[in-house]
Image (cartoon, rainbow, N blue to C red; front, side, top):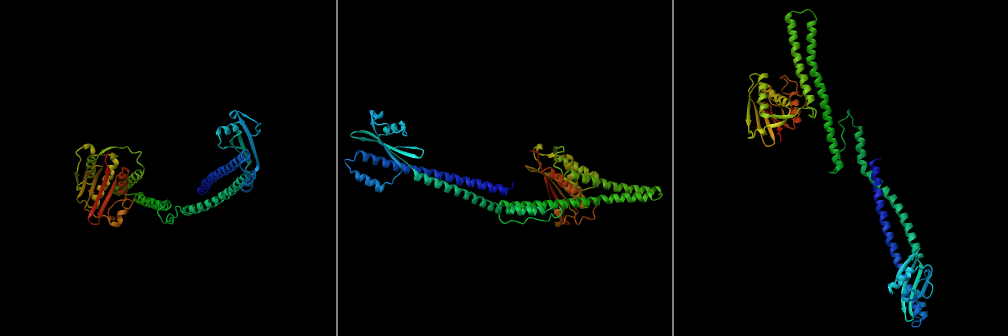
Length: 457
């Protein structure tokens, strides 16, 4: 069932229930008022009957009849009963009517002159105890509330009819407003169904306002931006990876074909093997970088996490750089070290962090043509910051936003050997460790990279 239909049904049920309850309450109070009114009329007749019966010598009988005829309408099935009471209400001179129970007569006597009402099958009774000089008498007046019954029946029929019409109108109104309310959702669904991998550039029409639906459209469009970027990045990655892998493979195959095309001297075979070896090393380096880049794209659950002492990590990165680039001018310094050595640890993978920091230091040395490079370590209460600063060629401002894209190389770095994998790999590793990287660079002035790693709590 669609949400629009559910909303219409829910609105109809709730509103109809409210109106039905309201109608029942109104009907109940009107019915009570009709009963009270009819009881008052019966009571008045009972008292007039008593006066007519016992005071006719003092007041003209014709006067009472005139009053009754002019001011009191004739009630349906109107009857009167008069019983003389003896022995304090224990006996009656005449036999009570069968329709009047003894308990009702006893309650009249107990009331001491106040009116006692009774109702039985739409017939109303009003009884009083009248004390006369000749004794005590019970006077009972009864009648059927025919007019009240007809009135309440008409009222009930009118309310049932009006409630049925109201429910139908409420259902129509609910359906109209639910369609109007969910119209933007239908438009969104229609637009979303048009979006696929071939037209990720399509976007939902922005809605004005700050309500939840407008915010949903904005969030969905931002999600589409990220998906489109991810697709483009993936396509570029596959294209660049295949190109980069094809280059050394082509060189290896070409050199092998050259060597096997005819008999060669030992020196020529040796040169061919050296070229194959060189290209194979490039291919190995490239595949290792791609493997590392793919592995760090996971959530890190399979990594062996342990405490890493950061000053030792920095020293080992320096030792690796010395073995890779002899004669480098990397200078290590420690700033703002904590007094407690226990605050110099972060939780992570020692090997991965060494790769991430090493890649950045190697880049600093390569793109500065072996000028001075500083490798600094500092701490605050929550983070450790590793800063790598060089005096190299820098990165153009328009290229900074792409430095984490695989295989991307800055426009001023094309003459340097590389594949554009090191920085994305370092970025993924640091992000895997809940850290972040900040890069500040200006062309021909150098680059400063800040690596922030959360300390172990």
